[in-house]
Length: 168
Image 1 (spheres, rainbow, N blue to C red):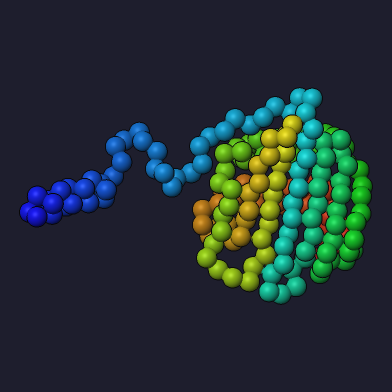
Image 2: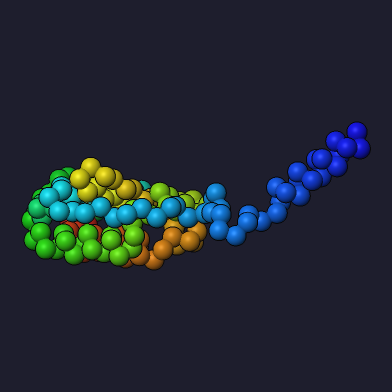
């Protein structure tokens, strides 16, 4: 019995000791992933804003590499239903550059604070079928990079959603 207790104590001590230098923490940040090239590949970027306890705008906007913008307003927006417009492919390229600068494909899939009644923002980019989705639920409170908020705002600005959403 004495040897069993000593063995257990030794195992517990090893379990509580820090990892050797250079080994990644299993619950740490996502591993770095190379950002895919857009050359000759279809690009689709989307932002979805979900419901909250109050009157948060609920809508989804999608921007394609050729400049097609698709909007669908659901609730608490100036325009409900589907709307479309065109922007320049250069504007889409600038948006993709912002994703690249944020190392978006290496971000965690979800930044979720332990709170209630807030809207979620879901940002997705797909390049040649390689898709990355990041959920932001008060993410700044749990370590989400400010670059994700910047991308959310840049998607709205690039797509021109304020014309359909109205004042927020």
